[in-house]
Length: 103
Image (cartoon, rainbow, N blue to C red; front, side, top):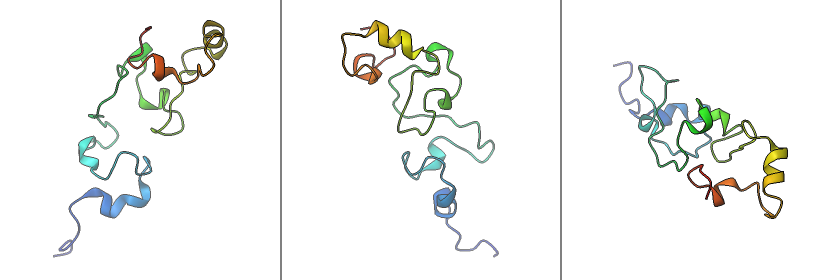
C-alpha cells in the first residue's frame, strides 16, 4: 500500500521536470514508455520528414525548444539568404517549404 492513491499518469508527479515545457501536452505515453524514456517516438503530425537532410534527432532542428526550429544547423544562413534575396521573411522556412522540399 506504499503507492496507494498515487496518480497513474506521469505528468502528475513529473510536471516540474517537463523538458517540453507543456508544449506537447500531458500525455507522456504518446511518445515515451517506461522501458526506454530517451527512445521517444514522436507520433504527432509533422510536416517535415523526420529524416530531412539526414536529421537524426529533434534537437538538430529544434535547438532551443520544440515550439521553434532552425534550419541553419544544416543549411548555411549565408547561402539561404543569397538564394532568397527577393523574399523579405526568408527565415520562416516552413511557410514556403512545409514538407522540406522546394515549392
